[in-house]
Image 1 (cartoon, rainbow, N blue to C red):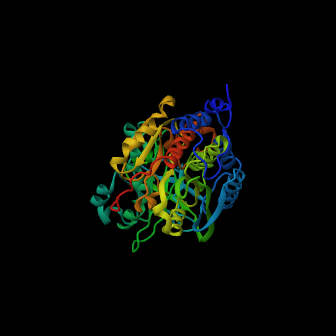
Image 2: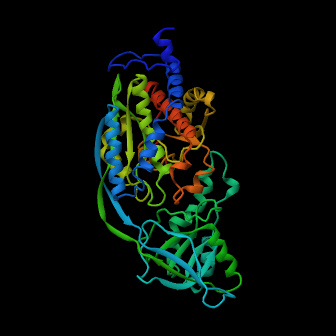
Length: 475
């Protein structure tokens, strides 16, 4: 058996391809080799562990975020990529002391309190240093908030009780269930403040069976008073609802975060030059920053690690596509998207040379295929790529024109086709943005499957015909 056959079977690496050389193997053979090489490798798991265990929390502006930038840059240099650190000014919000307790409710025995599980929302203002106490008003949605009006809300704490829809939490569609619930985390405080609330709480924007509150960024509205806000566990939201049916419930809330001056940080941008069309770019990415709870393993150490592994697979196999592979580790996805905006501005003149942009930011669940934000006429070519993933059960292509990744959204608005892994995300939102987002939740096999999907997809896009651009009217 000669060396070329052994290489095609994944038993030996193919020799490196020099710039300007012809393709080493046909596209179908390259897809097979990349898929099998990824499934046999633990590279992405090792890198995920380095970020999640070795560094830990990586909120923008923190020492952890700075350490992650330097680590990933060094690892990509080891792979032989041309690495740049592109400056980004990021928000620097720091979580402080946080506590809440029910201090009065119908039938309360004298002297008793009930402690609540909560997390301050990212970007929240603080309560007074000693906290505040007020009646808490549960509301199902914005319509009920408006129905109560200022008379029923002013001077009180609003609790939005909208639940994560477990019935919609199906493989490949968990994001839809999340999207409906997370609106109250993002916008609830501003809505409640408009009616005179002194603080806002929301039921955790994920499945409620572990008493883990879910943090995340909120949005204030110019001209509306900023009020402190936090997420409470689903179980505690249900407790408050039950007690409030019997009469007034009062709550003591103490949140002491700080918003510091914007900090200096970086996107890590690394290129593996294409052999024929190096000016054309296929971008593969994940975001480096994480929330300051858990260790950001699934969100999004896995995404960064898989993006790194795509480059590692190309180098290991010697498969050098026509176009340049660009690996990007974004900064500040969680609370500002400053990295995405900075990249789009810095590379505005070359965005028409970006052939495709891929982002992995839904955790490393069992791989089902990939999502594609492309014109409809591009779908047959993508379905042909997906056929090479059928042997590992990941041959689905989900068409979308609504965006597939927050960091690559500015590129989509510039016409760049966008892609993301399609995964079984049913368990992702149980740990997403919580203390439970840790390495033990990452299944090595599933992580390797995602590396296989993105390796095959990125190579195929970098080697094959360019896809049609997205329309400029993309929402």
